[in-house]
Image (cartoon, rainbow, N blue to C red; front, side, top):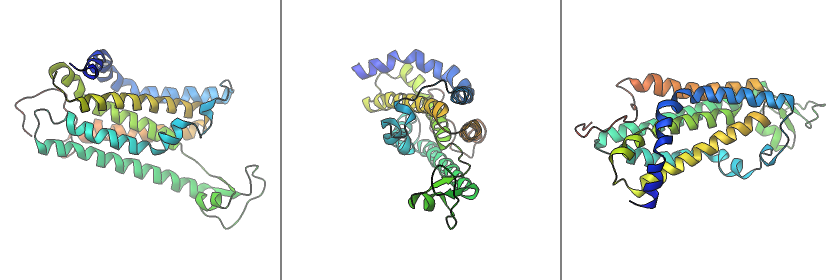
Length: 257
């Protein structure tokens, strides 16, 4: 057994927790974290830190391109983890969950941008003393060096909660693979560990967003969209035959589709 496989095997208790408890309570955890962080922000009890700046390395190189990280890690992971004793058609069907997830991500973020544009006003500076006419979007206003004030639903709260819930759902097959397949590929084990690491980053940055940015309602709406995106797919649509379906919950050596 390789050292990497040993690390994955030793993570089995964490994986059992993830499957049996984590997936059940994680959505509520995000709401609690959002409200708790918002309360701390309103009380001004959390001092400024490296993560209170949007220029921190995790925000710049991970969160701002978070959907790219999700796709780069989840696409090969779903391909490999769903392939054990399953047909090619089944694997292709499961991969379409990333198409669905991408559509949800794109639709929600574009909707957030649109809402901020139609509810916003362009000011000469962040002092918001002088309104400027002729600017209809945030991009136009900011590109001209001014300040835009609109209703800004927290995209970070949305993408970070939704990404974490997506990753946790898709890691479910590893519980059975770790228990029954000692000859797993090193690539699959590495992807599993990388997904755990990226999920931890997403949760941490969600917490930072909660205590440093946006107002309570904006963060609540962002989190709500993230949880609804997960719920309407994995808890509603994917339970039906005409869907990408759920990740395998058990090893079935006789199943071929």
